[in-house]
Image (cartoon, rainbow, N blue to C red; front, top):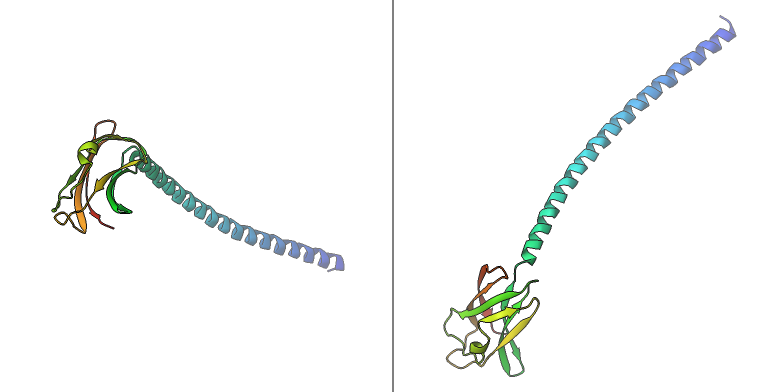
Amino acid sequence: MTNYEIISGLISLLAIIVSLISIWKAEATSKENAELSKKQLDLEEVQAELNKKLLLQMESDEKSRAIPQIDVEYEREDKNSYFIIINKGYVEAHDIDLEFISNPRPSLIEIKDLIPCQKLKPKSSFKILHIPTREDYAPKYSVKLTWHDSKGQQFTDEKDVYRN
């Protein structure tokens, strides 16, 4: 064999080795791409699930925003005490009524004038003056609130209101 044939054979052998390495690297890259594609699909599934949950949450939030949320709190200002009726919702509340279901029943000065309240706008409130006496003093009062939304649906909430 001549030098030329030996060099030609080595170059051919080198070309075969380079081709095999290229095929091996391409196969490894193909496997990595397949794994990445699988991970991408998994991420897309998770994203789709999160989007569904977010949509349900947004629908739930929108429904809850369409409902008046009435609450009652007890507050002291200077020498006076008040029951405060608050509309914490985003829509008007109608026919708001406050009923005391605990004993003793507090003596409220303005209750006949203010309850039932015909309409309470969103994020607004009104106060009912409470002048505690020995007979009606209690650390908490159990109350029942009832109100309607603009469609006439009635809502009720019973809770304990604690004195400050």
